[in-house]
Image (cartoon, rainbow, N blue to C red; front, side, top):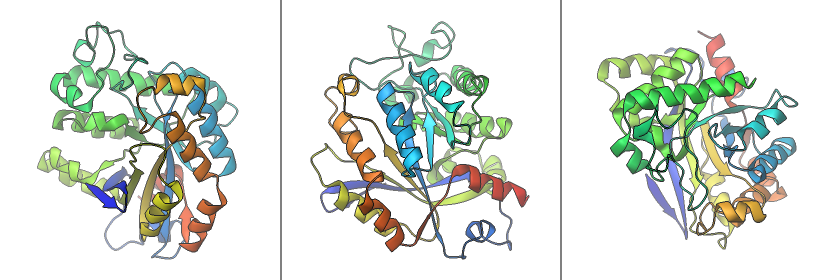
Length: 314
């Protein structure tokens, strides 16, 4: 759902991670060595591989400790650049940002597979559709599964060990058949999956019950959704971090350097544009951010840590 907080919009949702916790056992925080009511937070950067600017900013934020996780857009031109950098940073907590949309006005890309193999996923020019709604309208589930597999396989072939799967613009969540594929491939590859909890309703009841037995709840999911870069990042993120509660929380950020490359990619997109993303980068590296984490007794964790602890208990 979308929730107004002063002059900002904040997405607050609930999601799931494929791991497992049986009734009567210690909760996730206790399994990780924290108090039962600990506030665990994954700070996650989307869109790795979109551009050189995004890659550089994300590596900078990993290095400074501003983020704990990120995910890669495998079909994008700068995926290989990040895959090369990953070889020098093999411990990075990075997942696959499954990509079925290309939303920018002039910067376009299609799938990992040739457009002739996934015609329902691309337009007449061979590019992904710009909106999630169009994915839901056009996507043939069989072709979507082929493309998602190809994205996972390309990342693994590049030497990356994905810590989780998530989805760019929620495109994999566009219709029930795609949601089922998302779960299926996560379990098949043994990679944790993150989705809004409410979308379990798109899964048949029998599968839903099985999923509930295998999954650990992510209690809150936050993402800043401002119209442009002129708002106060300190106020917006201050309100978000004050809302982080006990359990597992995820904060999604979008990072880049505000340079000519990123300005060209995001033209006509003040929201999530070049200047917008640099403000995200500056914030997660700020002392204000660190002070709020400490004030709110928030413990930063990674997908890898959550998955490892949960699986060790199975």
